[in-house]
Image 1 (cartoon, one colour):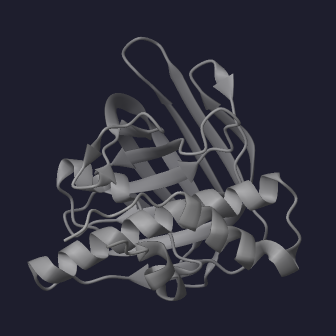
Image 2 (cartoon, rainbow, N blue to C red):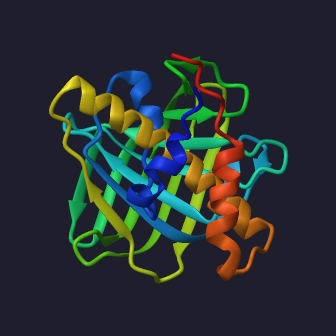
Length: 224
């Protein structure tokens, strides 16, 4: 029996993004915020990429992250997360000390059917200018490096549209499993939105394109 979880969840997850990679380190996530715009700079190692959205996530334990789906012509599953535990806010400026990068690609191994990202220790910082309370964030910047001297840089500017902020509470293991499936759908939905933007899909055709893209990316679920 094939179940298309993306079609089941698309109505509830539209305009919402998550950092499903945080499941790899057993972190429960309770806040998600999606910001649309563009990256004036996005460098991973020696390569430059483009992006059209960034997501912020926060866990009850204090770990936060900025997740960026890359517009990578060689890998449409390329996603990174700047992650850290030490964040603080001063007015409209939020700063996060980064201690790891979560890297997901089409070659990432699966765990319970979900991609499991590689974890790269980093040293760096992210800064977000704007407030979730007002639903407007103007920019996000991150600069970090690994022990081998590899550089990771992000400079993102919002397009001015209101951000989407969602709160999630998990009460039991069944709800946690449902949330995990929804989080996987969020990541795929954002990837397909980026693909639509890269291919110049018109707004009137964008929803149909995204649904088809997500359907094509969904593996068959074994018969039960």
